[in-house]
Image (cartoon, rainbow, N blue to C red; front, top):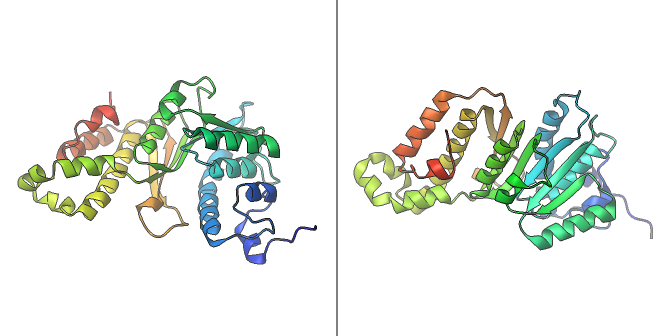
Length: 287
């Protein structure tokens, strides 16, 4: 049976040259080339993220013969990795240099499914690894230097694991969309009574909803300061595709090699102010 063309609205959602077969296998497109509402939102967000990543990849030094490397942490079903691979390294709009995408995921069944899909569709540029973030830091399956590290909705401390991986692998760029940050909120909750007696600022997290939201905000501020202290220029913006919330926050970090001492000092001061000193060793090692 002849396949129906995608609806006009769906065509305008997609980028030129995207693989229809891939999008159907990812269940983003139906067999007749249509998008349901949930898939439309998911695809819109992934493509918006690709709009940020593509110019970073295009601006990488062109004299190297080595492939461009992208590591996607907390890859899940590897939607982002597959679509990046398709848009950057395969289609008619591909960048000048070849590339490799490494999808890092701890759930074995998702990795097996993604590797099978890469083999079935002929995506040799795509490698899915069933390892943890800690294992990824020392894995010989990954190159010692990675050009771009991504993490789309890597929950709670998984975003920090992606940052640690990026620092270990001398990433030129980090593209992070944090999600469900609970670690700092839990510590704010634990020390709430003492904080309320110590400073009126504790009113900012007295109510449970505010504790959760402020915990997320503080977490991302600390991450940005940490990256600046480690020699990255940081930009914070918003990603489309979901309801307005902190889940939309996008952190872009470009390696400059210029460590900001002032950022390290402010990071330490904020950790002290909010009673988060033990995070300094677990997450923000400045020495």
